[in-house]
Length: 91
Image (cartoon, rainbow, N blue to C red; front, top):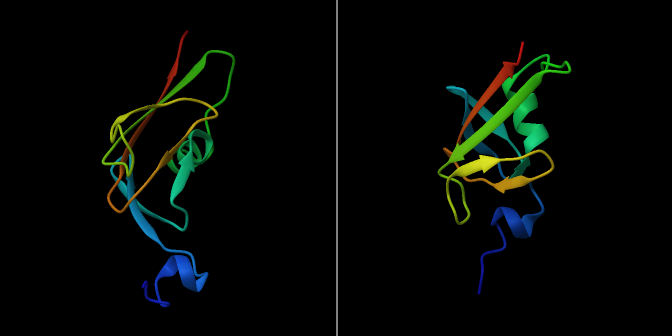
């Protein structure tokens, strides 16, 4: 029998501490989309016809636990999931 005070049963969101480009961030969801990770990495998000954004992750709460996140996709996270986000401009 599970305890009624666990976050999933109490209805309260759980906070996760993740690392984005070396900076600790706190989020209240167990999955993040490509777009959400990019928004956490850049303010404002780089735009332009030649901008390419790459997102890699490790220590995720899924199999595989590391890889590359593509636009429109999401990753299941846990505490200390690490994201590296880069933006390049093909000039």
